[in-house]
Length: 489
Figure 1 (cartoon, rainbow, N blue to C red):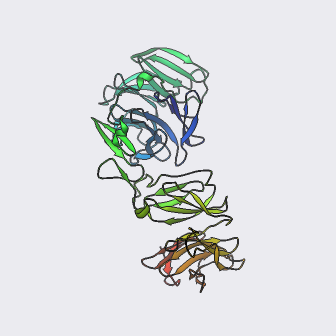
Figure 2: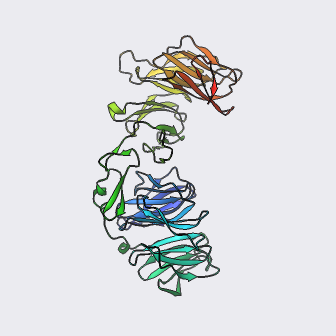
Figure 3: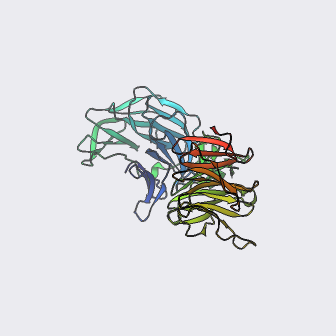
């Protein structure tokens, strides 16, 4: 277990467990507990709570990011992704709209930015090596930190970065965390008395009081739990500042409405859905990334995991209809359940389409016919099935391609306009890419040379070209529909 914080208003403790790689929270009386961030974390080294807006911030030492989310973990949003080098401790000043953090990288420093990540500056970069803990004195506008290498506790003015003072300089100490409240400063020292928490007057630390000893070498973060600390207000306090997803205060009565998923509308508060995105499965979770903007690390749609439905997701297919319905439909096969399921990309309306299909590795959707096509490596077949079985002429699990037991159809792609389907065949002796009509007629090989394990296949519909990847040869190629004019991409 690692860093933790206490929002007083809802009497809740937040912490990060680096062993389990997740962020969790619980009531202080332990009546309930839940995990709020469970995926996509590198190494979380610090967390902080904006108690006015109801947001949680954290540093990711592994991915060099600073992120924010609502207190329940929703609307996760990257606020700083550039220019960070091993960020660690973090603190926020919700009333002023500032964020502070320490870095352990090539140039150890303490950084400062607005709560939306703007106005990023370095406020301490000299005489600092391993800045561990960081804490704000909200009463006197001071920023405190401890340095595990120089064995010092120091402070500066919060606003100007000036008036730097050394409060404690020791030897044979292992300072990990510092906290300030009232007239006192508190710190954890893992080298003193087998792990101790100590206290001194913040203006004169010569008379040190040891409050606890024998806490062990795993002693890490300390935090103050007192309602007096969490005061103040700003425009984000009431109705989330009018923002649809995140309200990030920037000081001087200004706020930024941020969209973790989607993009900000012209009104500056509403979040609109992206026209398109890249969807991918992570076995037990569905995630998305932007199609062209690789600098935008936020998910176009909210990631979704549900252990009741997602055990071993293999194949995906997509029905783009958000302009008509407001959402899109995602089809996926799950090898654990041996079925094909459907869910909307707002993660509602889940249903099982077909059962007992085994391990489906290729899945494609014919929109005009509302029909799914899938491959089965175990039965060496390609089957089609109409999603809405109530419509006239609905197809019920019709095998359109049946091959020999040495053949193993893997992934497939459809060209609705040309009435064609293509698939990869993992026949150990004769691996290939094949094609046929959508009813299974005229099946034949189009690519059979210089190919071993073709594990990816897609179509450029405008150019009418095939693209395929080979996991064994480590390359991506394109060719015409008849297999001619092959080029390595």
